[in-house]
Image (cartoon, rainbow, N blue to C red; front, side, top):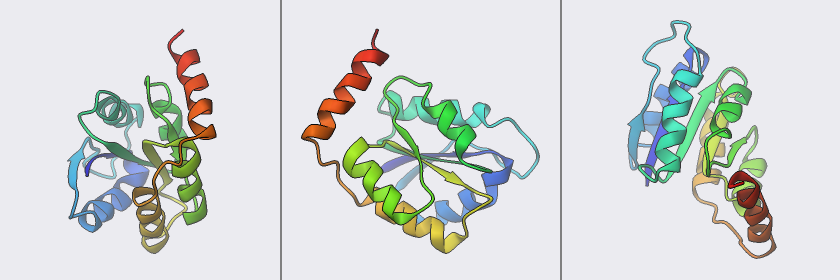
Length: 144
């Protein structure tokens, strides 16, 4: 799977660890390249755009809390970014919301927790059905 990945300075270390962990996937890294303070929209928007325009199948965005990156990504048409802090939430956001971007809180997850969340999110399929009806309503609003 081709994945977009991006972080701010607070998520940089976890991003670098996840890139190594995800070696079986094609990774497109949108930055940042250090722990030097920077603005998360500068990396989050390009990564979300890559998912929106189908350059990448899905994306993983990491900032201190995951909230900033979630907000950024969800401003991009067609993106359903979900902040996940547990394996169970990651599974449900794929099954019910067909999440195409995973947002992670770099300051609040250790490597083991993050990899469990990423694995669950990558390996769970969307259920469709009644959930697709809900996504259609969101898309209709987005397309207004």
